Image (tube, rainbow, N blue to C red; front, side, top):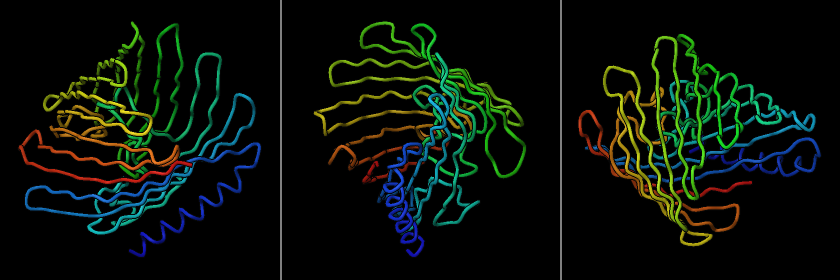
Length: 313
């Protein structure tokens, strides 16, 4: 609880600091504070716990086309200390604080280049998504990510290595492309590779269709690992009005289908996600999430119910 209070106080002080500094013409601050309580049930284990997660981003504009970025992240856990977005083995069992993103952004005519320590996602997140994590050993990348357009095609190029505390360096490469072939439709594909001892190639295709206030999506991915190498997800999102929305997702992602297990879904899991979001103000949202899952390899059941409040600044 003391660690939880410390993180909360740090969040309040940093929010005050960012508001005061935002008046500077060359440095901009933004970020979010997330608080969550969850109930997890897996077999004979029933766990509950809360967390608070602060992200503070700073961007310093050097010129019209060049800026520097960095991020301070802090998370504290309470109760049974579940739901961590950091490596407990590296930090502690209940909290972590770190400056975990930094680098330079260069805007070109057709592409933007980001060089430094960063996270990211490919496609709809099936084979790689590290945007929800913080700190070392959580699939952040060191190197270059470039994105832009060539004609009607959106392109992303990744030439990086994985940020890890020890062990062999894992090079990570990817090409991601997407376009809109017709009104309401979007399609895309991804090729990726983790080198080093992992030595695995990945590919995925995805599509989405929007009709009115509903969007239907799907993605299939696979690696060249000898086993447990396939995954897919099907989703529907619906906006009832400008404040309320809901989603339903079915996913089945085998253990070796995603890059080091960093997927938007449950690695080695199959089942359904249900979600409801309500915007209280333009900057604050309360969310309700429930998932009913089984492991792919053993069929072990698990459920998780989460209520989350997010404030963006």
